Image 1 (tube, rainbow, N blue to C red):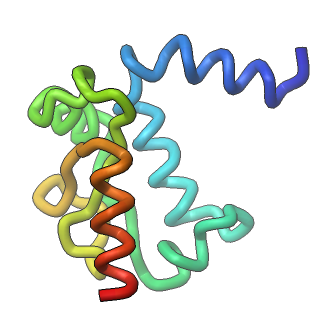
Image 2: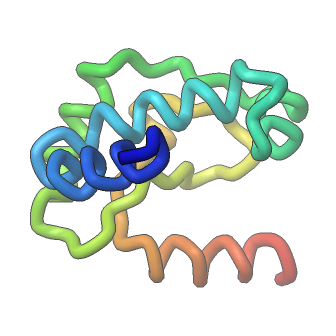
Length: 105
């Protein structure tokens, strides 16, 4: 099994149980890792991840993301950083529809 195949398998098995942690790791990478493909849209624009893992976990349960088909973390104000007051979990499709509306008006 390749590393990529292993990562996909691990994600599928653990996303429902620990999706909040995966969200945390991904947000940190987008904001801090200059080599990440999305850094230009986050870290390079001054977006920071100011939340700790427990903040993501609290939002996960507050928003009942464990009941969602494909939960994703979303920032209410796209110009602001990841903070508990600015973030929520929502369905991926809903998030993408809002993102398109935000980018293209």
